[in-house]
Amino acid sequence: MILTAFVVLAIPVFAQHIEPVVMEPVIVTEESAPEADAAAPQQGSTVIVAPPASEIVRVGIGDNALKNYNHREVGLFCTREAGGAAAFSPTDMAVKRFTANNAPAVFACESGLMGVEGLKRAGSQALYRGKFEIVRNGDRINLVNVIEVEDYLKGVVPNEMPVRFGLEALKAQSVAARNYVLAPRVKSSPNYDVVDSVAAQVYFGANTEKPLSNQAVEETCGVVALYNSDLILAMYSSTAGGYTENYSNAFLLPQRPYLAARPDILSQTPLNSEEAAAEYYKSKPDAYDIRSPNFRWEREWEADELSAVLKKVTGGAALKELRARKRGDSGKIIDLEIVTTGGVFVVSKELVIRRLLTKDGKALPSANVVFEHEYDDGSVVPSGSAAPAAVKLVRIKAFGGGYGHGVGMSQYGAGFMGSELKRGYEYIIQHYYTGVALGTKPVVLGAAPVTQTFYTREKKAAIIVDGKLSKVFATINGEEYQFEAGGGVLKRHNTVDISKYIKKGTNTVTLRCDDKKRAYIELVKPADGDVW
Image 1: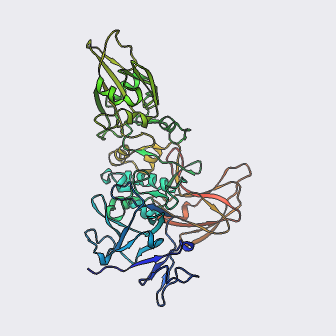
Image 2 (image 1 turned 90 degrees about the horizontal axis):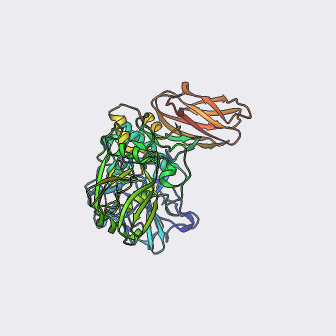
Image 3 (image 1 turned 180 degrees about the vertical axis):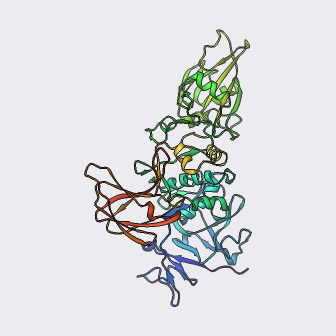
C-alpha cells in the first residue's frame, strides 16, 4: 500500500520548538543535523512556516486504557488522505518507531492524518490532526499531540456529548470545552497541557469527529464565556436533576458567582430542607433534563449490606441511620451523618459521599438524595425524623436525581433546551452560567497587533477595552479603522461598537493600541441574553 510521506525530525535538546510544514519528505537525525540549525532542511526541500489559525494545545496521548502516559515505544504512521484511512492496517515498513533512544523528535504528515500503531479510540484506529512530539521522560517517552485548539475541539465535543442532542447543545458544549482548554490551569505534565481522558476532557482524535459536532465547533469558532472580562471555569455534568448547585457547596471551595445554584423552573424554591428535598426527588417535576435516564433513580440496601459498605468509615459498627446534616440549594448533601452503634461519623463533599454509598460496587449517580429507613416493627421513617424506640434497622432506600456533580451546565438539559425548546446556544450558556457574556478570549493589546477570529450569527459585536483609552486601531475583515474609545479615568471599560463593520459568519479582527490594554470582543452581553 502506498502511503503519504511522513516527516520525522529528531531534535537536539536545545532546539525542541520548531514548527515546519514540509513540502518534501525530510528526515533529520541527531547525528546528521547541523549544530547551528537542528531543523535545517536538506538541499532542494521547501519549508513553509504557517501561522496557526487558532491557539495551540499540547495533548498527552495515553494507552488504550487511558491510564499510562509514559510509553516504552510508540509506532507512528501517516494515512493516504485526511479522513480516508480508518481501516488502514500499518505494516512494519510503514511505521516509524520511537523510544527514549531516538527522542526528542517531531513526527508530521505532508497530508492525511497521523496514526498510532495499536491504539484504539471509540473502537477504531486512533487518528490525529496536527503533529506529534515525542518527548523523553526518563527511560520512557511521552507522546504529545500538538494541535490547534479548534481542531482539538472537533475531537472532544462528540466524545463529551452525544451528537443526537442537536446542534445548539453541541455549540454550548463547544463553548464550555473551549473555555476549559483555554483557561489558565496547572499543566497535566511539564511535557503537555492536558491529557486525552476524563481527567481533562475526552479527546479521541480525528477518527471520532462527526459532521454535526464539527459544525458546532466551527459556528462557535473563537467564542468563550466570560465573567467580569475573565474566562469562566465552564463546569458541566450529565444531569443536574432539575436544579444546579453552587460551586462552593459541591466542592467546598470559594464560590464562583457564575456557578450559582439555579432551578430549571424559576418558581421552584430551594431544596435545602429535608422535606423540600424529599418532595422534589420522590417526584418527577418539569425540568430541562427530564429526558435523562438518571433524572430520577432509586437504590436499596439491607442494613447489614450497607453497614459492610461503610465499614471503612465506621469500623464495622452496626448502622442505625443516615442523616443529611447539611444540604445545598439543589438538595445535594454537603455533610452526611452516619449514625451507628459505635457513634456518629460525618462525611463531607458530594463526590466523597456518592463514592462512599456504593451499591453493587457502583457509586451513587449524585448526592441529590434522600433516604427512607425501614425498621423491624414495619415502620418506614424518612431521614431526619425520629425512629421508633427499641427497633432495629432492616433496610434503607435512597431516592435521588441527577448524574454527576450538578454544577454548571446540565448536558441533558442543554439537549432538551436546544432540540425541544428551540433555544440557541447563547441562551443555554446564560441559563447555566449566571451573568456571563460571550466573546473572544481577552488579550493584551499594545503596539504589536493581535488577531482574533470568531464566528457570530448576529451581525453584532463590540470591542471592550479595560481602563482609560483614547484610540483603538483595528483591521476588520481586511479593512482598516481607527476608533476613538473615549471614557474617563473612573470608567472601568471602554466600549467600541463595531457591529456595522462585521458580517454574519466568520470574522477576523486585528487590534492594536499605543498603550498596553486588556481587551476582547463581546458578542453577547451578560445576564439578559441581548446581543450588541
